[in-house]
Amino acid sequence: MSKSIAGFSKLSKSKKIDWIVDTYFSNGETAKNVLKQYWNSDEKLQQLHDEFIENTITNYYLPLGVAPNFLINNRMYTIPMAIEESSVVAAASKAAKFWLDRGGFKTKVISTTKIGQVHFSFLGDFKKLEAFFNHIKPKLYSDSENITKNMTKRGGGIVSIELRNKTTDIPNYYQLHVSFETLDAMGANFINSCLEQFAKTLKSEALDYKVFSENERQIDIIMSILSNYVPNCLVRAEVSCKVEELAESNGISGDAFAKKFVQAVNIAEVEPYRAVTHNKGVMNGIDAVILATGNDFRAVEAGVHAYAARNGQYSSLTHAKIENGIFKFWTEIPLALGTVGGLTGLHPLVKLALEMLHNPSAKELMEIVAVAGLAQNFAALRSLTTTGIQQGHMKMHLMNILNQFEATKDEKQTLTTYFKDQTVSHNAVIEALNKLRQNIEK
Ligand code: MEV
Image (tube, rainbow, N blue to C red; front, side, top):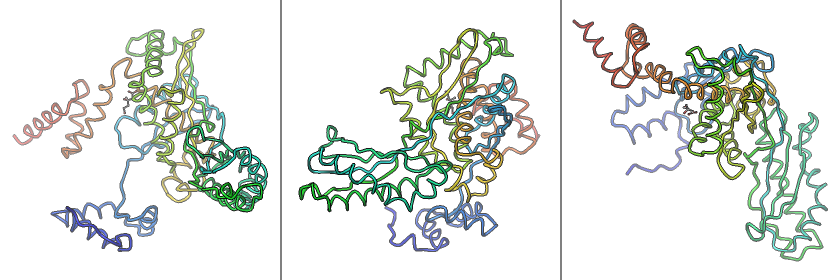
């Protein structure tokens, strides 16, 4: 069993590394060198990264790629994507180019409010609690004014505060259910600070509320936290064109392609096993842009999947139909994003990514991210319903296998040409690489 350690967080970075290396590695020097390889030579930049989290020992790189040619609401974008999976960026670029020639993407933000809740226990009469809530409501607003004043000045803030009776689910359980508008900020800190203030006011005002009995005065705050379920922070992205404009270069008619495509979407709408993979493809695009723009992909993932299951069964995030000869493909997706605060002003690559996107507002970023998801899903379904996914995928995978076997630049070039009309498999690549190396040795 490995050793435990007290006071690890207090150690210096090099002492932390020493402990890790001594505890877990037989060849400590090699491990140290791997970690150091990823340190930035610019000490200030390294310090910035060290301080993003706790106990940092090195940096973990992901490639930052770009997908050009996105026409969104008649404006051109090159979308930055941070992702490790091969073929995602290529697929996004391909879908962008495809729709560039067919009018581009159209988007619309439907709503932008976010929710936070104070969860509490109250032992007593609900009617009295309701009266108490109405009595202290102005104080809930006024006590949080120092937190909300700047946001309110800019047009955001608290939208509504509701008291919810949840006692049919759990005895004595109630909530303050609060809607917020956080403008260009993702707003997690703002929302949580407001909620913690509401909790304080709720608790202290109850102690002085004469109408309550002794028991009723003891409101017990369980927790105060924002919700990552944001069905009212919703954006729509859509593409459409005449069915005949969908004709594929490989001989499939526009009509046949459109019908197959709609069938594939319909399957994801009714079959959870398929819906999960279908939505995973959507999230390939979404997460990559979320990461590149310094947003919280865990929050978005949790919220999006809850939304996909909102009708009681997990279902597709995208939809498609053919109507009067027009093919239409769209998504409506909840995205709580920020373009100010958090990492957005701190991480140099995030700043660069946002500038590349014309420094969008949070609403514009919602639109761009939704487009990335829709484009990714379009590319995946287009491959799946025509050539199959492996053809394109394995071509991209070829480079990963070649890198794994440390192929030289020349070897990569030769084998990329060779595999243009060959099936890529792990074994086939190794065999071809070995053959090439043997031939060169001869
Ligand atoms: C792979 O990362 C994503 C796909 O499986 C998505 C899909 O099946 O729609 C190709």
